[in-house]
Amino acid sequence: MLPIQDINPTRRLPIVNYALIIINIIVFVTQLGLSEQQLNTVYLTQSVVPALASRAPFAPETLLDILRSMFFHAGWAHLLGNMLYLWIFGDNIEDRLGSIMYIVFYLICGFAAGYAQVLINPNSQVPLVGASGAIAGVLGGYLILFPGVKVRALILFGYFSRLTEISAVYVLGFWFVLQLFNGVMSLGPDTAEGGVAFFAHVGGFVIGAALIFVFKSIFPQPPVDDMRNMLYQRRGRSY
Image 1 (cartoon, rainbow, N blue to C red):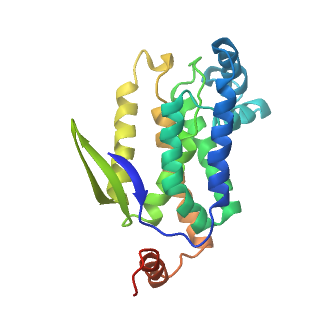
Image 2: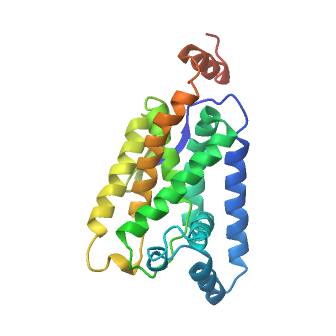
């Protein structure tokens, strides 16, 4: 299941969300100019390595490593997949929280995701890179705020594909269950050897969902009728 678009209008331009996407792309393009050896050195010295972070989890260097890790990516597929989810779901979270609180929310989720993976793999020497953990927090927040919003998704069955509309609760719920299942299945003797940091996804998602309960009490949601009118206007219909 690949989400393509959500049917969820926004009231303002998601400047921070666009900026996050642009920064991630710029950093990745910069990575392309490095040799494999140089890139490995950058990962080892500038991103979070669980074996090092677990020894000094709240040291300034560890905090900087986690922050920098949120903007590194391991390849085109990694980058494009993350940016697709951020593009689809991030704008509505920014619209709901406001730009300042959105970046605070995003970074908290990213840090929580990093610590979750370090907690699971405290002896791993493999650097953690990618915005997936922070974006997972965005998905968790979206699930709480907009569970009934329709998401256009591409369903793939072998050589057959179909574009359909599915409620966000099913799209994002399925994504979370898949991450949790894969995370549990990945536990074992080879846990510290690398691969996908599934528990960073799980940790980010859970923290994002929890934070939204706090933030939405501070920033009341627009009336349903107002949002519905906006949606119909976007579709060119009267209501």
